[in-house]
Structures are given as C-alpha cells and as structure tokens.
Image (cartoon, rainbow over all chains, first blue to last red; front, top):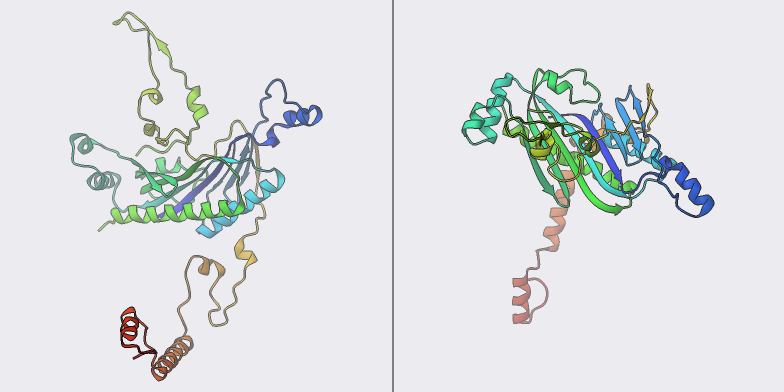
Length: 222
Length: 144
C-alpha cells in the first residue's frame, strides 16, 4: 500500500510556557502563581504548501502533518528537523502521549461493490447483517510491546478518500483499500529526547508498513 | 467505510444533547447525540479513553508559506562507492544494498577458499562437549 499521509503528535502534560507569557511574567516578578488562571494564547499553525506540510504548535500539543512522503527516511528527516527547531525555540514540556498516524492507500481493480464483498468475505462471518451491508469498515486495536496501534481499514471510493487528507494527493484511485494506523503510547510525564522521538517515528512507520503489507496480502486480487 | 474523523475530545464535549418533548411518554427526555450512546469506535476514534493522534489545533493563528529549507540526512550524508556509483544514501537507508560485482564475488570466493585451506592444514574442528568429556575420561589433551 502507498503511504499518503503521516501525522506525528506529541501531547504535552502541561501547557507550553510559550502560550502562557503572563503567568510566567507574574511568577518571575512576584515568585507567586497568578491568582486567576489566564486563558493560554491561541495556537500556531503553519502550512508549507510546497512541502505539503502543516505544523501545529498549541498549548497542549505539537504536531506535524506531512502529505508528500517519497519514502520513510524523508518523512523521519523532516519531522525530526521541525521538532528540533521548535524545541530549540521553546522547551517542550514532558509528554503525556505520543502518537503517529499514517494513511495507506492501495488502488483496487475491483469496483466498489466487489471490493466490499471481498472485505465481507475475508473479515466477517456470513451473518445476516454482514451479508446485507453495502459498505464496511473495520477497527482493531493491537498491542506492540508497550505501544498500541489502532488499525482502521476498509474500501473507499475517491470522493470519500479525498476528504481524508490534509493535502489532496495529486492522483487518487477511483476505488481503493484504505488503512489508517494510529500508533501511540500514553505515558506519565516523560521527558522528550531527540533519540526517543526518532526511534518512535521510525518504529511507528515500519510497524504501519508491516500492517499495510499484511492487509494487502489478505486482499490480494487474483 | 466510514472515514476516520479527526475530532478532539474537546470538540465532542461541545456537542449539546438537545432536550425534546415526548408526547407519548408525556415527559421530556434527553435525545442523546450519537456519541453519547454508541461505542466510541463508531466515530472511528480509539476505543481507549484517549483521543487519537490528530493535528487539530484550537483556533490557531494561521500562517502559510511556499517552502522552507529543511536539511535532510540525504543532503548531509554522501555515499561514495566507486564500485557502485549509482547507489545513494536513500538506497542504503531503505535496506537496498547493491548486488556484489563480479570482482567482489571473485575476491569473496578466493577468501573463502583461503579460509578453507587454512582450516584443513591446521586441522581445525569444533571442540564439542562430547570431545572434551571423552578426552577427560581418557586423560588426553588436544583434539583427536
């Protein structure tokens, strides 16, 4: 399957200081906490159109969405460079969650109804409801060591497929198998390091790639 | 299939459950939104309590530029293999190692042959547990 979108998100356990300047200023001047909590400043979103990249830094999360992924190495490089630049500017607080979501697409030679039938045949027992279904989608949560992966997959037609992407891919198939892999880890106050992030992004994409191959082989068209 | 929805928990909490009257029951009841009673997975959100990986910011300030210079490892590392001039850093990183050339295969074969000759001349054989036990019993040292 082809990798068409990746989102990497680190969720902060406490809001980024960058978005609470008055609380910080008050504390540094008085040594005390602000008596009333201030609403944090709005988040920041930067779209880099040529690179099909969107960078989001808000009080609770830092995330990068990539729509142009020639290979996994390119994806890891870009994500690491952006995170490095952000953390050089503002120290990222300890993490509460780290997640990597990738969308995979494989063109199908079958028409949509035939592909739905193929899914039903492979995934479901022939019960009455499954037999009557005109569209299907499946979701599984898998464990990979301490990580969890939420796999969602099913057949899609191009209009629906288009709506999934932050940046519309130049060419989408009329009918396709779609896979969404959300690889994540919840944690308590874990410090983020470059090594940890790089390993996570790499491992997550390789894991998702393996899952995409498994699903693809399941629906191998004769 | 129903597409995944990139929806944050905050957004879901904002969905109001409207109060409507029910003439049949003669009492008002709460018409729950879909999220309230169907399994969470219905919305293609994780069944876990945490929200899925998303990039949804909360009313962020939006900026857009054409491009930005982000140096990639491909630019930092240059591969120079005279025998394989076409091999790039990306190839090696993706695990696509070049096939050995004819010269490399010959050199490898020579090295293997040399290793075999040395082994034969020195009569090198693996020292197994059975051999050691036998030698200890017989009071012999060295290989038999």
